[in-house]
Length: 430
Image (cartoon, rainbow, N blue to C red; front, side):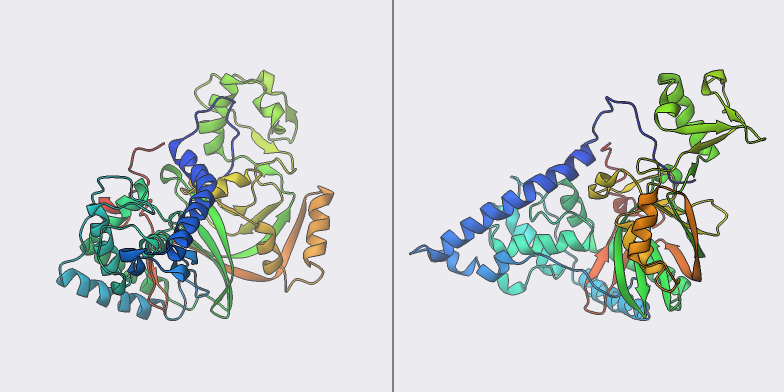
């Protein structure tokens, strides 16, 4: 179950989903700049006629944001969800929202009858103000509303309708209502008394919250377990941080990943500084092992510490029966992926040193400078926290903040009971 990175041989095919995430990063700013120029030209042009009511300079410049400093499982989590459920019950009883069936790519500047469907859909869910009206024009109001919708669903805020946004738009109000009700039960089961200071990893959202006095002090992007090697739901306490940690490879990864890799590339272990040890602690030459055998050898596989090791600078330990932990990664580009369900069960944390500082702030002698000096030394250094910090891995696919912003995420492990909610993992895109 442990989460670790295996470097695949060169020539691996780039997945469509990673290409999509990279493309979003490259194209979003040019699209936004182009859109802004078009808006300003229309605002300043004489005789713009019917466009007067369709564009607004402030709206066109605003970025959709639904971020909140409230934790997912704060003291008002249940009441916020119940308020959202009441609103979605109202939406369902009044007929829900229409599906969107584009005739053309839906993006800023397009005029098409399917934009009218999109406007109606966004108005019903509260992403587009009713005052924006219903027309065939994909204007700045629609662009801002789409960004808001995308932010609420954990999608890249591009402002145009891509494949994933369209699928999320066309999940019915009735299914979303059931998703909220399912998650209300989960939230009530978890409870709100999680501790004065705690770390919460929401698996479907693929991020970690460091919470203090019911306020989110840090929110870090994470990579969690793929469906075949799911990150477990658990409650524990973080008791130790290891800087420059060696990595002892779990048996499951040796069997499923390293054995096939060694058959293809006999130098894989040497190139990645992974050593083999027998039960007496004696190092074993990889060339003496039969890598075509059905079962992996009964040896310890340990990777040397270093910036390119599977855990890079940091390993965060907490007691659990699943042998999982949180850690750094040398592959920082993975945090830019839209779908961050790639690990073998553990949780990789972006900007993990910020979390290190927060966790160790009550441990004498371990300020940021000391942490950075220790990491630069390259010496494996375990540090016990003066006060262990509660740690919670939870599975919440729908929640709401007190401002009424309702957020949804894909049901990546198919626990919500509705196939429509497993959009990203069942789309066939690999």
